[in-house]
Length: 115
Length: 115
Image (cartoon, rainbow over all chains, first blue to last red; front, side):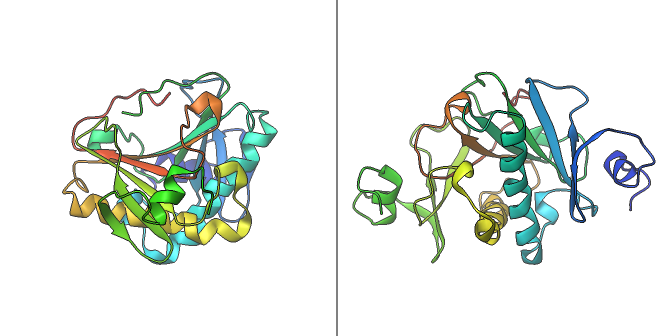
């Protein structure tokens, strides 16, 4: 755990946030500044700063983040209407929190612009 | 293979496209309508329509798509400047080709707008 990391503090329940999902590997909660009706972050419990810091042994965990997003999209009622999954990595992407997370966005037609 | 699917036809080399990367599991090639200096698609060889169509046994493959993006980002010289990874799924996301693919975008500051 990184004491300076807000997501680590959420994982540790030092910062109270209603969770949409949790298991031994990941947690999910709503973005504090949502940009779509559904805007959920899926976050590994372990502190990994970004995609650049992943190694091959993390592949299963990362894939399960995507599979989890699929399940949450169903629960949110947006599986058929559609959704977008986004990993931001580093300065050009606008990554704010330096703890790996994946955005799940949906609930309205999203902009066609990806960047 | 789905004969109507352009990405299946690229995988089968029926449609000629210069590949950035290939292994037994995925191929990668530049988007035909790039929206950033680096805009590469990472595509599984197998025809899976979207994230909705993934199952748990696909987790490792999906995670390796993300790990591959990390390696391609290094080769493109954008690992430090930053990059964005995007899966679009279904109508609200603007998913065009109904064969799972992940966008790798970078090479300039990307918009903060994710949707």
